[in-house]
Amino acid sequence: MRFNYKLTDMQAALGLTQLRKLPVLIARRRAIAGRYDAFLQQNCLSIPVCPVDRDHIYYRYVIRTERLSGILYAGRGAGIAYRRPVFKPLHHYLGMTGYPESDRAFLETLSIPIYPSLSNSEVKSILRHLRPI
Image 1 (cartoon, rainbow, N blue to C red):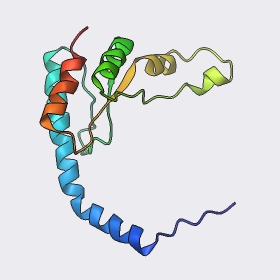
Image 2 (image 1 turned 90 degrees about the horizontal axis):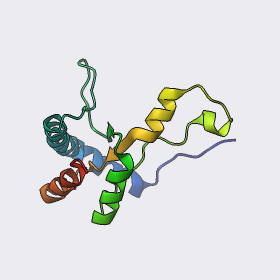
Image 3 (image 1 turned 180 degrees about the horizontal axis):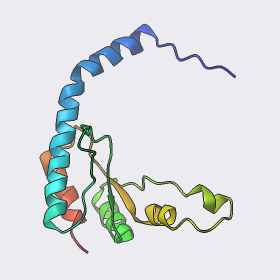
């Protein structure tokens, strides 16, 4: 099986334009992540950790919480698209047991919106709905 991943001239031009914007987009994601970090630390929740020898671009901002269903429900009512970033673990499909950390990650992880076009008021709304329920 083969795939053709060639770009059209229009797609290549759009890609080059987006690459020029990349530093600004990453800077905005980092700014939003900084607000999320501060909020989570104030509310005694753990924050995602990046290895010290690397820079994070915050493609996703994933937290672990035991209040997953409550946060998803509150977000849905407010129009916030929190997502479950971990799919059903493979061992569930295979009828296997004995992988408690995979099960826990599936049940307790949540991806918070962090796209660069989020406004400051939208970030405030996201944080307001993350408060303990």
